[in-house]
Length: 403
Image (cartoon, rainbow, N blue to C red; front, top):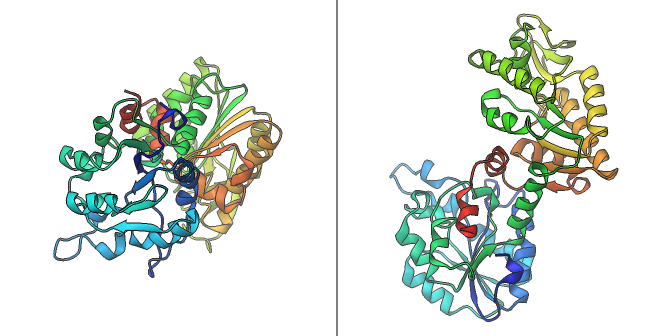
């Protein structure tokens, strides 16, 4: 069931969003991207004349308790988001600071059609992350319709993302517009993507991306490897990687993935050269060397110019592109060229007609920092959720709506 198919007029809608935004020490929002991405769904529901009850988590308050064992309310309360939400929607937003059913019900009763109520951080309730049935039932009792637009938490079977959906039949629950777009775009990569298909996989560890790479072997023409994980592959092939990040326990697995790629007729692209440094610091001594001939005491922190040239050509020739993970330590300016060149090449290919999906926190941060997010097809809001979706895992938050 899609949002457009629901009967919404004069109904109360319980909407789960992902407003897990960063705050500074003055509790000011420093990046409102997640809120911005939810606005189309909010406006759609408001224009339908709904009473709109919004719920979200913020941070991991249960893992950052105060000395007395209680939740740090001031640091994680959603009241810090109320004013900005009002500005984004143009509607004065009410706030309920409690999960007590009587207080939530009273706040809902005071709500007019076309108005918004924001509930307190769902993770302030001790049962939220445990999938507490009672909490979910309390939330469900507030509304006629449940809409899940929080793709970033779709891989969690929490009360407000998954369990709550059990209390609504298929005619009274759906994905939001953002969630719908996330699923549609991920499926476009996984099912019937136009060739050549290129997956760009980076990051620190092969162990974090094993299942993703195995899945991509079946659908990709090229898999570009960058970041620290490249050196596990290089060492597995007999290379010397110096002090580069390398998972020795996964050398045999890396060899196996290369063998499977050959059988699947998928090209594994490893960086021919690297920008190496004698310390993990932007101020370290730097030199370019072959990625399989890095001296002891030196570490590869970015792909080198030959790798950049080759990777750029592969990306330029692609019709479908998935990017998950940076090419190096792009947070340091001296080791950022590989990542930002890839970002530009993905944008260029998109402008020529390729479909591009950016998923994963570091890739999203890089595309945003490069100011190219509007030049690619889709930038996912879900890091772990997108990774698991692409791996082929069933996500509880999605199954709760479709089952």
